[in-house]
Image (cartoon, rainbow, N blue to C red; front, side, top):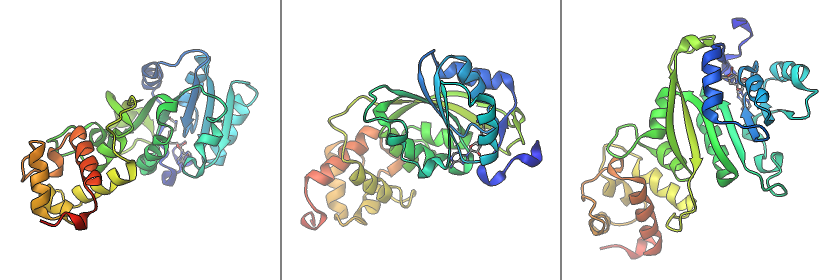
Length: 275
Ligand code: SAM
């Protein structure tokens, strides 16, 4: 079985039944739910998910495992297998979001090499997702879950935190997989944030964050000056919100970054802010 795992596709299959059971029960799937599974692989979670009575759409890139799953569950009305790379698919079309208002639950033991791009990709589902229960490398989970003043906080925390709130689930040791990965894994849960009128425009928010975290050890005002605003003006702006003028990006809470991005956008282009 080890020889069958394709490392390039991040294949570490869950072989611990107790961890698979725990993950599916943590996901809170009920009969009739619409569930999206990304990367079903050998089907450790797939089988348990189908046993809940949910309607399952699974996306698997590896033709070999897709074929096995199709022959195992293909006859079931509640099961749909999409063979393909989830990063290349139009998820809204695949899940028929325009015509069907129902919300989806995501369950995935994500391939670690592309876990982050996949999470960014599912961000577009936002409120059409009721919840997401995903397994990622523990180190990545800590970055997603980090709060201000924590060295793990960064671009990933805020970009995903823009759409979702995250809860810590439980860790899963390497021995629960075949082949065992070199790292510990963690199951986390994501829930879309309620609509927030104070949320800044996403692409501008991303620009601000990318500049803010460009050099982590540098002060925020210095990093943001790269976008064109003068450093003293940024320091005075930060002071308006009670943020220390020597703060670093990692010192700010999500709401403070929301405020900062809104103010930078509202107060006009950088070239009018020279002081
Ligand atoms: N769900 C299974 C389990 O828990 O045992 C397999 C998890 S394994 C960590 C990740 C799975 O994602 C593999 O089956 C792999 O082939 C699949 N995969 C990798 N990249 C993918 C992609 N871009 N799109 C869809 N599936 C992908």
